[in-house]
Image 1 (cartoon, rainbow, N blue to C red):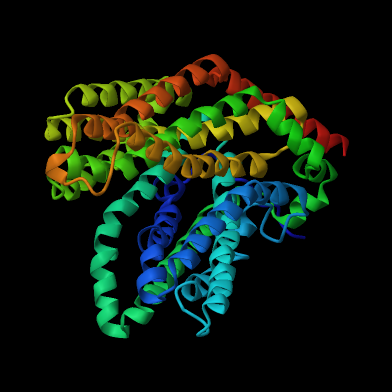
Image 2: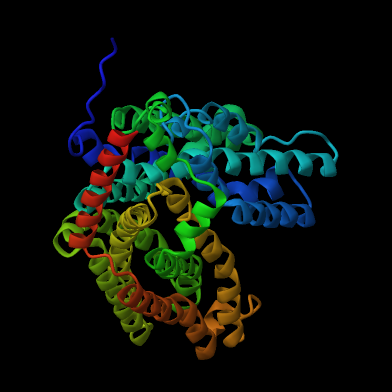
Length: 472
């Protein structure tokens, strides 16, 4: 007779401090494309600008429109051998390095043929890596059973994710230069991408191992009628989980502000150091400082979130970030003052990055309590939506802000007008600050899930589960 495995109590030490190492390698893997994809397509693959524009526009567009499907499918189909969520950490992973390698290999001499192959492998990378990414986020709500545990897991995940910025400083340009000498520039990007993808596969396997026992296996779920009914959803259940879940809707709107802050600051800061500070070299120092601040903020959030709750922490950080950005606008002619103030806002961003994951998990608890259906995969998969929308909106907002000041690349750096400098500050400081304040108000008014209420909901869910399983 097989023994029923007892679910571990609380978070293991490995989960508490190492859950997220896979996210660090995931970020390193995707950083290859973020930093080098366009350059590779133009300078190494030597595609026309029209071909590059087609790829760099269509791939993100398709990815954005399909970002919601992964959690929906995970929640709607039968669970696989190792569980509804854990299984997805490993089933698609062996294919990911292959696709990541070939998205940096030109196939065929015809540009049209090459573009077709690039599109297949580039969109294939997105399709394959989104399954384990969604499952990995969903496991926070599966493994953690209290608000404090969810904050601890989310904090660990965010800390490791932000550590990728330090790791990239050694594994980006320096490692690429070494690979170029070793295999020539033609294959250096493919090999770099392959190595990062292999690291991601290995570390997601570590997540798979460290969460063993925290989730029912496929057989355990299917053998219990009550569990199977509760865990499997249909399209109507998914729509209810979104549109009858006010905290989730408010969180997604507020989360959009966080991502727009991240993308706008990252995309505008080069203009600031070039045209306002007149010192492009400062950007390297700035990047190092904000990386440290983001890591510290992500780690510190576990203590702040436990003391204040994830919701209050996120609201407070939004307000702090907005104040720092508006203060930076007042002192925009003082580069070091701007660096300090934006670095403090990045510390707040590190806190928010981890707290938002925990809050999404809280909305999944609310949904299960309200509907009796566990739509964790769907809800955690929706974390991708604000990110994709913000990534799309960022360029439009930045371009509009620069247009306000009459920006032109033809204007010499030393001859930039005051209006042009202020338009850069508008995109870098003012617009993100306003968005963050709106996000704070939305969270304050619409996300009302205090820790005590969540703990009560979790207790009621567990009691309901026990009663259903006895009756089954």
